[in-house]
Image (cartoon, rainbow, N blue to C red; front, side, top):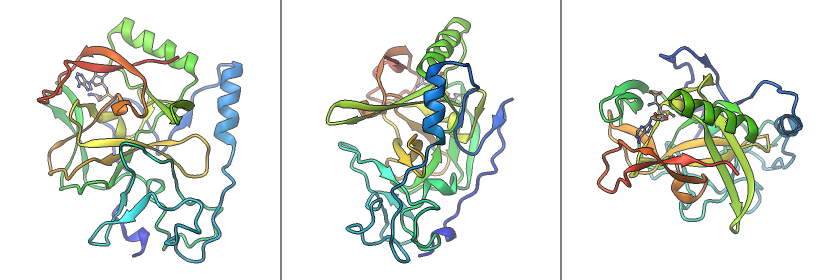
Length: 271
Ligand SMILES: C[S@@+](CC[C@H](N)C(=O)[O-])C[C@H]1O[C@@H](n2cnc3c(N)ncnc32)[C@H](O)[C@@H]1O
């Protein structure tokens, strides 16, 4: 299977007045030491390239592989991560020796899948995202791309959103190793973002998020199907990451209408 045969594109139009970006970008320099450290991380390169010949099918040899696998039809790569104990996903990148065309460890780097559409969600009374065609369980949908923020800037924006009654797009992704927080990544697609910004929160979501690294220590927030999803069904993920990725407390009233709805949206906490 040639990975480049998979149906990807990234030329979606945004209905809102914002800058369309293909992947997350650094916030503007505010002169802080925190920004400097974020910028250093953003500009550093992961030096763990593989030396696989051809594809990366042998996960014993490939330092990255093992998180994606082809489904039974052999057509699309699926996220093979267990939701209970997600392992870090590290894709092969241009420094790797494997063949770009046959490597089975590159997915998010090719951009969102086709046939997504922004629509006016009757459930949420605001915009949402759905697919015009069925989506199989565990496939990649799109990145949640936006401005990468320092904690201070994120707190400032969260407070401003609250004070002005604006929708909040800030997503805080915490990664843990055996209960210890290892890295915090904060993405805000409110001013600069991609199609991922339109996914609403559900207490019973059909999508899940995963931290995916390609060639930078700052992960991308990948959104994957958590089950088979029918065409026209609204795509949602749990803003609390179901406890794995995101720190939250109870927030605003949740409109998801799921049978197990807690009544509240998870509220982003930054410590
Ligand atoms: C990332 S945006 C999602 C896209 C947004 N609906 C739009 O029109 O651009 C997050 C915002 O959508 C709304 N939202 C998302 N999920 C919600 C839910 N379960 N209940 C109520 N509002 C929700 C909230 O206003 C939230 O701040």
